[in-house]
Length: 169
Length: 107
Image (cartoon, one colour):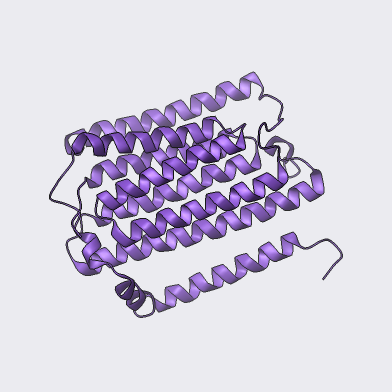
């Protein structure tokens, strides 16, 4: 079980990396992204994430599907036709990401004694239900939800403004 | 429902996904590809929140963690919608999805 759990984690990470590395082909990139998110949902649900894991995963999948639909309208899905990046820029970016990966690697090295599969954890999901979240969002967090509602409204109006044709109402 | 896993392993996954999101956002030149990176970065945030909330033994802590993860998911959706609208507007005006060409504000 522990090996299966770790294998699923690794698979999600590898597929996410493939989604970025295959970015010149939009269809393959998003297919890899779908697999990565689906495996991440399984991992989160396996860990006891419950309802929240499904909400987060399904909303991410919906976002990726939206990107795919819009991408199909705008780009050649088989090849992005962008000219190759200049060598100095490529080197600088590679160095920056290698340093960042090294920083994460050091962080994981520090966490190494704690990186273990724990079969006694993962009971948080039992305490989170739709009713309890609703009571929280519209109870103690109602003021924060007003702010979130304003953000939603503002974003949708901005999208409408960006999508309308120039010179039309 | 009981679970199985490790909060620290989930945090490691979150760190890896966030790195990949940054990789996509800063490495990819296609604006649509950048949005894929942004989606992974937001997923990493939500995974890390869920990972931290697994350690909470009180019901209120678990619910607060869940509310933060759901809020992050909603904000991710809004950001992707805004980003796609900007991409469409860019296509209408310039006809190119190359982020390197979007240098109008550069000094």
